[in-house]
Image 1: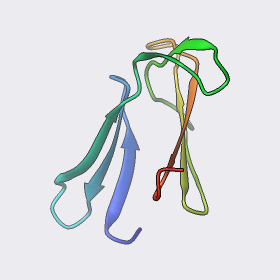
Image 2 (image 1 turned 60 degrees about the vertical axis):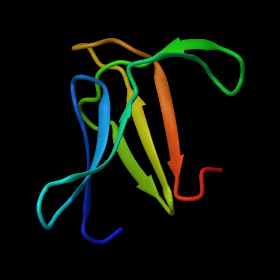
Image 3 (image 1 turned 45 degrees about the vertical axis):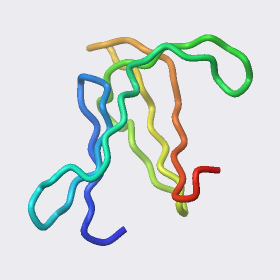
Image 4 (image 1 turned 90 degrees about the vertical axis):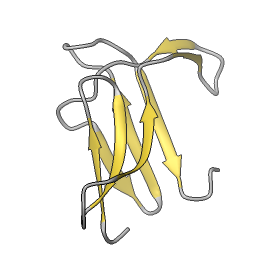
Length: 81
């Protein structure tokens, strides 16, 4: 998406910010406990290194690093599917 930068942080948040003024357009906390789509209990953590990837209209986020351990892979889509 033009005009938007995606970033991950050591606190577990992934954010979309406007390139024009830096305002936060979207923020999601990945450092949470949850049950995955295949029924496994897991917890997210820090976002670091090469944790973000975009393929087509899907944003993939790996949540967990040595700074703040975790083991979740999030897939965000424009249409929510």
